[in-house]
Length: 328
Image (cartoon, rainbow, N blue to C red; front, top):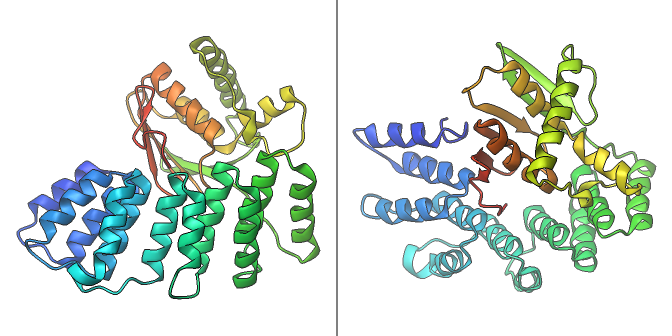
């Protein structure tokens, strides 16, 4: 529970206070480190675990995921390659997906694709999804089309895969192809789920979408956004308009990225949550690169801990730094 809520210190305390630990407990603690991207801590606990209980299938998924999110390529490959001989565990589709994600996140996208082609089983949705995401991050549009076509064959109704492909084309400036993907979605009746961010204040959940002006405290939110924008500009922040996924003029792109849902949620949090209390935001999509950069600036300017749980992991912003070390 603590691990999934991002309270890793509380998770550690509960773990170390237990009079007796079993397989589930060890896996849960390693999984907690995984969500934080602490590959070193996950590996250390994995080594400690082996003196008490033998790792199982789930343990290896947790450890490989931690390596992927922490950029520990050598560790991850070594553990994967030792699964059969050292741990007597036959790698499954989840483990293969972790390695594709591990290589893809590290920028080794072609290596990830070669790994997929050599898999002893049919690549799953998770495998092609990891490859497509890596292609989007590193601008590998042609390889991304291959990953997307395989994803569409396996799961033709998933809007997320179509949006990922469209966003990849948009980020590369290939607007016609991005528009075509969106049009194909509409033609076959696939609806894109709305991106949103939410946080709890005064025992209520407050939900925001991009460009949202519907909140009762909208005037205070907008005033806070203006104040933050001025202070961030003075501190050297430059908006990354590559995350404006529409064909707009530069000034319009700056406005587009400034009103992403997580920025609006943060502005509300700064207005509604007392000073000194961490601001915890949840987002149903991956936090964008511009918001990630902005949150680092803001955490230093306002002197607040900001914790964002996106659909991949936790980001703990503190003193102009993020716990992910800009690797996610």
